[in-house]
Image 1: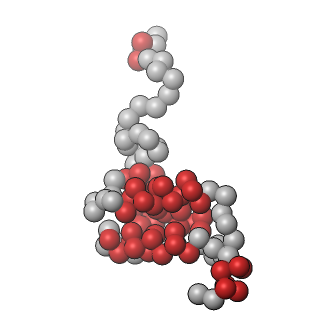
Image 2: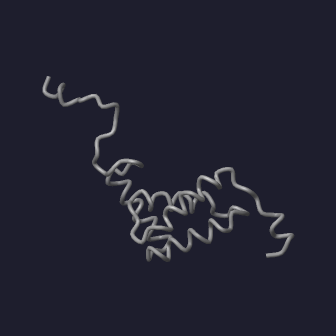
Length: 107
C-alpha cells in the first residue's frame, strides 16, 4: 500500500468496538448464532467503506474459517431471525421485563 492510499483511508467511529468483536470471533472454530449475526452486520457496515482494511480482511478470513460464503452467511442469519433469534438471548427464550404473563392467562 502506498502512502497516498493510506492517507485516503477513513477511520470508522466504531473501529475499536468492531475490532474487539472480530478478534473474539477469530478465536472460534465453530461460530455461535450471535457470531454469525455479528459477522453479517459487520460485513454490511464495512461494505464499500474506504478504510479499516484489516477488519475487512479479517472478516473474509472468518468466512473462510467457518466454511461459509457471504450468501450462505446471509441465508443462515435470515433463518436465525425467522426462528426468533434476539441478540444476547437464545432463540425461543422469553424476553421482557420479567413480568409473568402466565398468571393472567385464562382470566
